[in-house]
Image 1 (tube, rainbow, N blue to C red):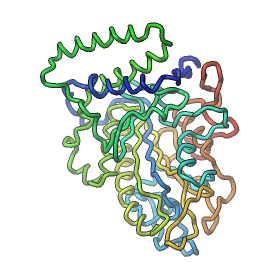
Image 2 (image 1 turned 180 degrees about the horizontal axis):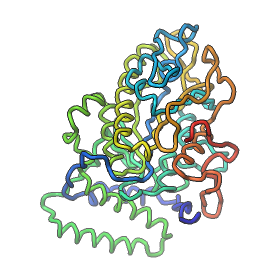
Image 3 (image 1 turned 90 degrees about the vertical axis):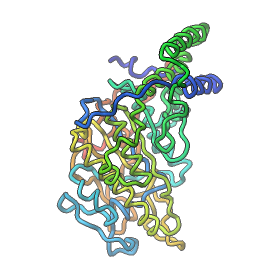
Image 4 (image 1 turned 30 degrees about the vertical axis):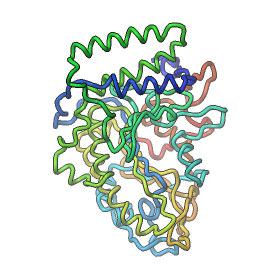
Length: 428
């Protein structure tokens, strides 16, 4: 694949009306075909490189998770426990994940810049390249662009989240709306996914032929990229409408439901596993509610067991199915939380020294990278910013981030911060 074929982006000046028009057709017209049979129980045969991106929105406390500091002024009430890797400890709030440590890389020396959600969330998910007057794509959009949908031909970037769904075109940044996220609110499919029973398969085929004819007329006199964005939503819809089994939660093994947890995060992680098994290139799962400015310890006592259960079950299953060789797993927030405990028994925002976890494709197994000082107030030695992580993730996926560039209408742009580098201690 050539440099140009990888990185020539879609025109990002598609009008809002054109985009919404395409998406309304996606919901109301393009969806509609009979369900296929469920996925086979055996390990999937898809070998494309994939990503599971678990976004812990609001800021998980590193002290109550990956980097406990017992018997210190800021350590909190929870004790550390041993993991499956000798000498490595995590918080007692993560007993299931502790048993999966042999598959994980814990990075304890993240040192980023923004301590607000409004700045931190987009900066972290875009990789914070040097400011060039353009809006960079989120990581999921970048992977969708650079690696494509893969052999499954399913939408390359899907987002399972609490609340409402829809097409989140803004994630695509200057790459354009084609590379946005298709969000499934509460893991549910878009409305009107079932074909109206009064419409036969033959009628549906004729309707799609009419649509294709209209597309050709629409394309006349317009930039090719504009029509590509409009056509893209239909093609992705046609693939999804053949995979209604992806949303059939009744097909889940009751034992799996119990292992992942009947709570929201567990349900969404189990559905994410099904998406990965089907070959979706990039799956993002959100967990909300982690902004614990007050009652941090009660908050983490409630939140951490749910994360621990769903995350550990996912790692266990991906490993058992041989999928960790091809699936890069990332779990992280926009920052950590302050070592100092505030007057509301909470922890505030702390980008200066925090942790994240990775696993799978291209990653070492059972290692801890970096450390913080004895009280957890700062990184001990070298710290890594988000630009370093983007290089690391791209390298793990086989994308040469130091050589490949985007072509933004003749403007060459690096795919990751060109003054940063990969975390070699984490890479296999």
